[in-house]
Image (cartoon, rainbow over all chains, first blue to last red):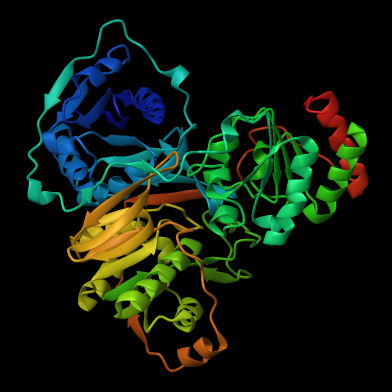
Length: 328
Length: 254
């Protein structure tokens, strides 16, 4: 076969949402190129998971099973997928762009002499693959270069870029093909422990109806008070982008983004946030977005309903004052 | 412990980016450059490991003449020596080709540990570290917040999604990609800047790429807006009044 293979990720006993998005991307790419689309899922015993896929339009489902795949390791996953890909010889291998994929897919691609086209937001005719540069300030089209020795093109798909409701379904279930990779314990060089959470989330930003969020543009820890005053006036929760929490100006539990919380408030008021993709994925479900940033080209304005390209140190105090006046 | 920190020089964060006339890159004529921020955290982790466990910190960067300033800055912060692989053809290389260039130099140094940032602020491919580990045949772990030396090697704290973390044990030599925020970044002191002048920087010629790139950047362009953004203008008081009106009549939060 020379089709599109989508490698899915599982968490606990379920296939993740971003995996289904990657599957939607895979189906769309396969359609464009008149190829077959199939899926692979790895684990110790995954028959039940493969069942989750049976209603989807797929040529086959590859159940890659081995006791050493029960807990994720880069070495185990890379070894297993190298063998599966060598056997299937797909033209394209797609992944969801997750922390786990970032951990092993570059090594897997290297084994085939290829470079992963990572964090892709769209696939156009050709195919060309669209990804962001400079934290979302620019877009770039990438193309695989035809190789002297045939090798797959590896691509990872950004969360939210493809919609799971566009997944094509089938009336006849796709055949499940079992694949048993050979993995020796000595090939696994790292020993992972069970995942844990640092502290119970005491701040639940996910259910907050109004969020005032602050970014690098606030410049100094003392200036956080400006944002706090605005949040207080609005009865909002205060949140932040990663650099603010990295600096310790606000606790990590107030971070919105791929490494923090995902929020979908009625209003998200972004102050001095440029809008790197790691932040946008955490807040683009907000109903209304207001952005205040002095750089009119900041990517946050691409997702904002209302934008103010001006100095936040002038706008925020004026806005706080106007809100308090409107309320009294 | 001998630690190599692979760093990248990138345009300053607030740089005004201009696309080149051929539409395939960024005009670098007026850009000013700095260390890639995640790499600054990798350097910080290396310096702290050295302070705790002793050893040597070597900073490594491939790039044109201009990257020497970023290496000097790393020396001023406390790195012991620098290696500059002179390469003017970064735009023609893909990540694999660049990683091969770095790997050849790293192999000759046989370090115990290699650190790098989890991704670059410019291209953001986030792969150089993992590819390096694969080329060097050593174990790796990515998106690392904390590093602890153990009798058997290392115990690292790896960031997962949704606020989860995980400890991973691994033998040395190893490669780690470092996440921001695990440590507080230090500034170079005046004494450090003075000392840096006498620290050695090896300048090595970068071997030309032997294999053609596997992926190609064909076009750079401004992203299309996903939403129709209404930009509000006026004096701060006028803007505030417009926003309050939106909050009352459209967003319904006042």
